[in-house]
Image 1 (cartoon, helix red, strand yellow):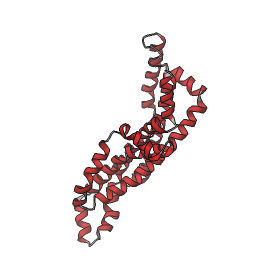
Image 2 (cartoon, rainbow, N blue to C red):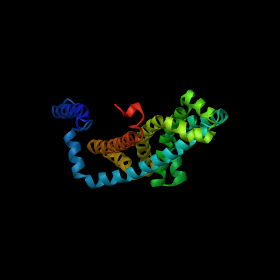
Image 3 (cartoon, rainbow, N blue to C red):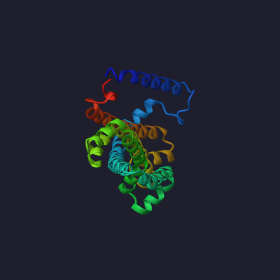
Image 4 (cartoon, helix red, strand yellow):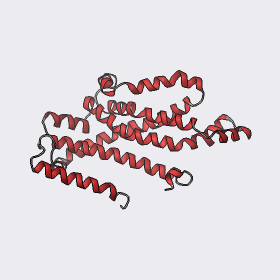
Length: 249
């Protein structure tokens, strides 16, 4: 609680200020709803909103899990030789630069409406940070330690799994933190086109000019992203607290 308090104070100040500005008429309620209206919407439409949150959570978590496994595997593969990196890494970068909103209609054609499109969208958006951070972490292993493993005759696979991969864990976990938030974004984009979760709620509320409902759905999506971020932080704490300086402060 003591660690969360400094971040909670600005939040309360912004909420109170926004409520006051809207009630005073300085900000139009149809543009930015007062926080009280967003809270009332969360209470009144809780069945719809939390049902949509559950669907978005499934899609985002599935896409995140696939990106974590696939991204780490691809990062390890790319780290195996410079020739492989030169041949395949540019395609990973190119894949990342394609706007997901531009290919979302294609995902519907390929996977159909529903959860598969949402998972595919979350996966596509979130995999590159895992690849990039895994690759950077493995390639950044201390050269002196690598030379020591070579001196003692360690095989390349033993060096990878006993030295290079553990040394890369802090950066891999950083990539997973980024991927968690991106997976939620990708899931929402997929739902705009072919899903039924929070993205669909936002799209319908927009057409109805229900900005209070839009803000309520966005708030739940943000909380989902924060929950994923907190889970990775907990995982980092468990994995690194005994030996890495980042988790010893």
